[in-house]
Length: 334
Ligand code: BTN
Image 1 (cartoon, rainbow, N blue to C red):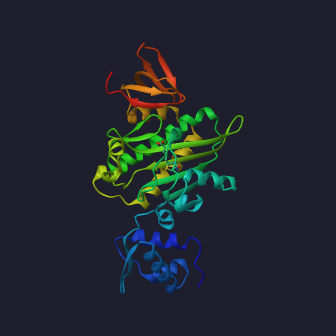
Image 2: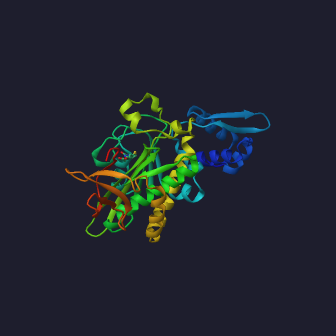
Image 3: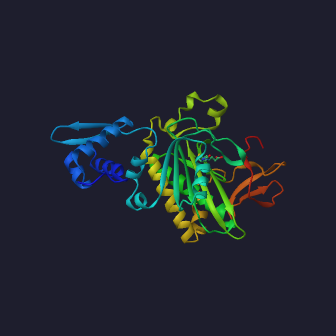
């Protein structure tokens, strides 16, 4: 008999998950891991303390009846495909200042990229343009990716747009909800914000050295408890679906989606695909908008993005301008 290895928890959970709704006998799990049945029982007891409900039946074995509603490291790994399960360093925190900050700290300590940081809660979650990202509620997705892409800084804008549409595309298929993107990286659902992306980079003279991509998605927020100003502007997937979503498989799928999207972007020129997909999900397309790139605001009609991912605005005097930054709002009164 061997001692339990570091990834024993992921393997036990993977075995149970792949058999669901059937039972798996304790001796099968024990022999697959090369450990005693008592060691397996001990781990199952530990899982129960962590919020799993595991049914045990004599002569049949065990099966998972309910998973924890908060992120669980071994469970997320068990949901990942083999390639990512073994190759991508993943850490999961109960409560952290910001997953983006933690990713930066891990990079500074020499963590090999790509890697992923997930948290149940954040105390200092950050959004774009210095805004706060509320992270005190559990049941939502707060995660960051550490990348070392070796891209020219000019391609960074396109990279975040690319990840945004890939996440949007995945969530549409996964939930059946009609999510769209508001330039540059707001995930929108019927006019309300449901998630956002914050990309932060360290740039050497010619190349992006380190890049942290943070993603927040309101998955199971009970929006009815929010202040009215927030409820008018934001929503959650569970609110739209009228049912809670299992967080751990969703986190695993989002993780895989972003890692795959990263590899496609760094290996090939996704320019054409970006344009096609962007048009499919562009919530601003041909809408009257106001953009605030600095102190003055510009008005006009949104006409998609240019080859660098800048927002194209057809101004009221018909001039077409490309904007690289700014707060965008849809004008309800012209
Ligand atoms: C925005 O819409 O302004 C971007 C929001 C990004 C929020 C996420 S939550 C996980 C990661 N950690 C942070 O501090 N921010 C990002």
